[in-house]
Image 1: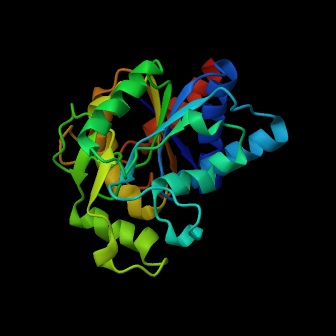
Image 2: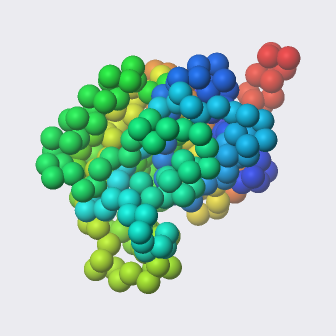
Length: 271
């Protein structure tokens, strides 16, 4: 596990985009797991810039998203602010700006007629693609990955989950309130990759920014592995994981000096 700390959100986003771009250049048909939310937007914008200005080619890339609200799907006939699906978010924030074929992008289908069967199919599609080469993760305010809420099994697979009140409150403030929706209109369930699914990715990056994430970031990185903070599963991860933070999100890490020292030493080693 590598911890990378940068002064600003813009700097940490460039680091994350650079890692992803490295995978795309080294393996043009790589499989990328993607996350939604405000945190990865800067990373996606930098990838868009690299595509437009540096020719970063996504034409063979395949993507799988972590999650989607049950009952929602992309509707391009609706204004962006009225379509709160994660499929629409990915289209607006990344897919429509790069040369990735639509058929190569897969966001869980919140409108699936048989959600349980769909979740099994989603797992099968990841396996058929050869697994995920690099998974992008954020971290929720209660320490969750995807919609793996506190108490989720650390061996869980893609499934339908009930959202906690904290997640509903956080997401209402982030997405639904500004769109003019009431709390009662928010979806109460979601489809999410499981922790076990996420841990099978060969590489991963976790992004966090802002002082409001500092406490939970410290617990995830430095605390014990507990199902109540599903991001602590990073300590069970066998692949290469890089945690990328801005200074504010890193501000409560007890071992911050050590992480900075290790990063400097690794840079020297690879000169």
